[in-house]
Amino acid sequence: MGDFVPALLVVDMQEDFCPPNGALAVENGRSIAPIINDLLCNRRFAIRVATQDWHPKDHISFAVNHPPPNNLPFESFITMSNPVPGKETQTKPQQLWPVHCVAGTEGASMIPEIKTDCVDLFVKKGMDPGVEMYSVFADAFGNVDSTKSVDTDLKAVLKGKNVTDVFIAGLAGDYCVKCTAIDAIKAGFRAWVIEEGTLCVVPGLGWEKTKEELEEDGVHVIHVDGPEIDMLRA
Image (tube, rainbow, N blue to C red; front, side, top):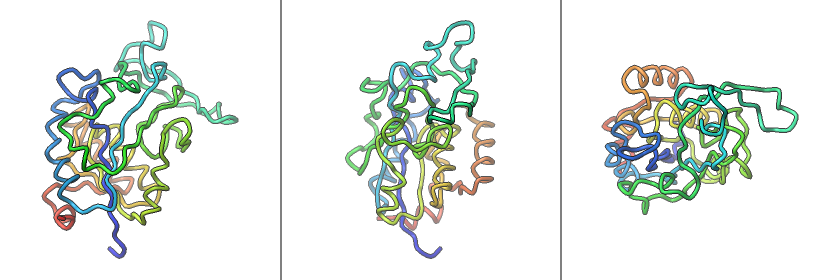
């Protein structure tokens, strides 16, 4: 494999993404905490990063911020424009969600099952009200703007530590995990998603489709008991 400097990205293990009270809960979302804790605390990484959705109340993805009848969470889509000046004509459809992970609220906090004392860096994302940001590396249009959408230029941090490979687990597999992994490839890293360490909004066939998308983009989907993880044993 040549040079190999691994980093761990734990994606959005937050109260609003977990039962029983999460506004956008992934079924059994808390159940992957032991796997993530083993990765965080018992494996050898150059840096261990946890991401958090950290939305303003007026975020574009919240259904309540749009007029009826096109404001049904999980069902409705709106047209979202690129927030970069001069690129406003670039648009994308955006699915609407319930209000979730509002900055500073209990729903945005990490679940207590995660051993956060093993985390080296927390990165807050999705802070620009006008654009969705599933990936920690870039918004939905591929923009990287550390002053609006995200509070840390994670690519620069990882490059500064000579990271070559990014291992990813967390929630949800078919949204933030997938987009982060694909953008890690675009940022110049090798990317590995740990199958047992992620769960999807749409389980079953949703995960199978997600795996196909990941592999098409060059992301490796691996198992927690596989050789790639075993070699990271501290």
